[in-house]
Image 1 (cartoon, rainbow, N blue to C red):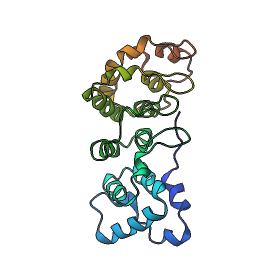
Image 2: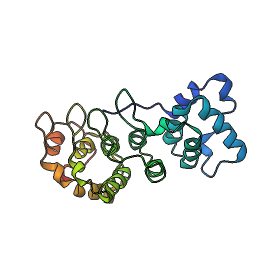
Image 3: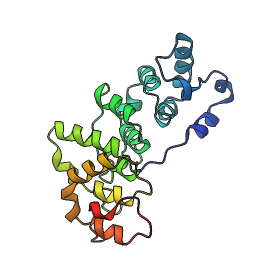
Image 4: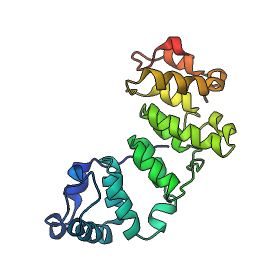
Length: 217
């Protein structure tokens, strides 16, 4: 269900030699890019449109992502991946880049209820990586458009709900308040079973190490 993404280091290495000298250091570009930086971004976006978007997301630099989105063809971020059906929003949710998720939803209108070929929502992707802040944002957006029904959606080869995905995550953000809010909102997931007839609590019991307090379930 989850599309693997390249690290920022690999993405830079993947740039053609002819472009590496002009690729700006995205990790320090936190404010509005200068004109020179914009020119560099434009060149990189023209040669590696999808990779440049993913690099900005992995490094979570929304101002850079905003510039790149203006430079790449619309289909590069609007259309789902042919192989797995995921969108750029799924990618950003998986990366836990909440500010980039907000940008994609609020300015580029990517759908928070888009499902990949296995039924996975951006919410599932955020949950799998234990990104509770991103999960809360996506939940709020789903509620705002009246799609609370999809909070119980299952996805992936195991038929996980978002809560199953969160339980199975190897690492959960150290944010107890938001974690409790997420689990509370997803309370209806607690009684649902995956394709192996396991509830989220059953899943916890089957794991040798867990990143979430079983008492929350």
